[in-house]
Image (cartoon, rainbow, N blue to C red; front, side):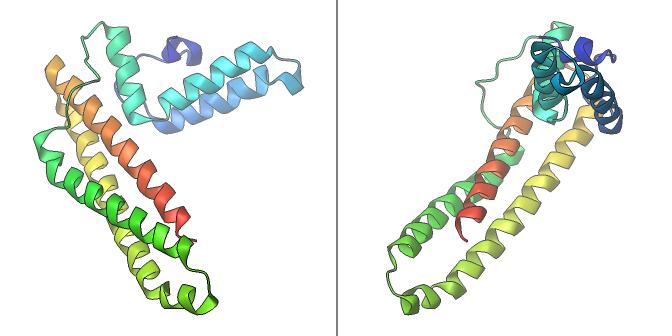
Length: 176
């Protein structure tokens, strides 16, 4: 599927998100099954929107449409290795804390864990902000990337960053 054709917008490594959202709203109103639209068309529209609203997925779609070779199985870029190690460490310690919190039986035991829970929430929030900053940096690099290999590496980096952010957001939710 070519999400750019679905939305009838020019293929771009990073389309304007406001334009994508406006086009989605326009097409959704037209193709929604409750408005007499075709269910398959609406599902394709939703799938295209999921791709175009994700920087990593959008860039991968652009690479495919442009015929630029891309190997999604590559590694994260060197500039993100420290962040990768921070994420891995925090995920491991957070999962251990969550197991400990679920094992607590009494109200007192749970209350005694609350300061550690709050500290873990703070660490996760801070790391999510670091990931969002790294995503912004990758998107800035995208605008000046001139080589296919650069585009491919940025696509992989964005995919890793999105995955890490989702993983941390899930852990954050598990703390409650």
